Length: 192
Image (cartoon, rainbow, N blue to C red; front, side, top):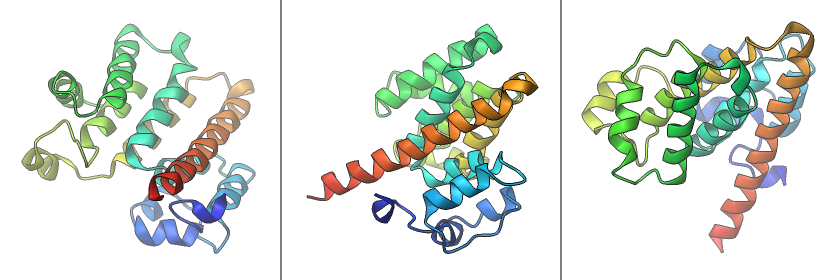
């Protein structure tokens, strides 16, 4: 499956997405992306595996992955974050629906001070089918959507009790890896 991933090696991802090198201390290698991600998880800064997953996944899938991660933490989120998660869920289901565009734009205009606000921001920045007008995206998008996804997941993870944090982090990374493999399979089926 790893040969069908969007980025076959960690170096491929770093070359295609130079912003990732500003978000991670780890240096890219020729390891297959999944192996590299798992090595990050087992390394000195396991949180970098979250960042790597955010860049490894296509943007819409990354937003969905972040939604799924935060959905496992709803008891740690306030009412507004839960509303934003519902909005993101609806938007991912129907990104081209005119109904969700204004709502995502409104959520995107809020400062990203909570985990779900970061994810809503990523949904608003998503390139194809963006909820924002192109001129607004170019003026307001100083960072890639993957960075917002990573920030949202890591902000949610920071709310988890210390003794549970690594197991939750590991589960999130494994979910990201699974989604990357599913996306690769979907892409290969769509190619036929």
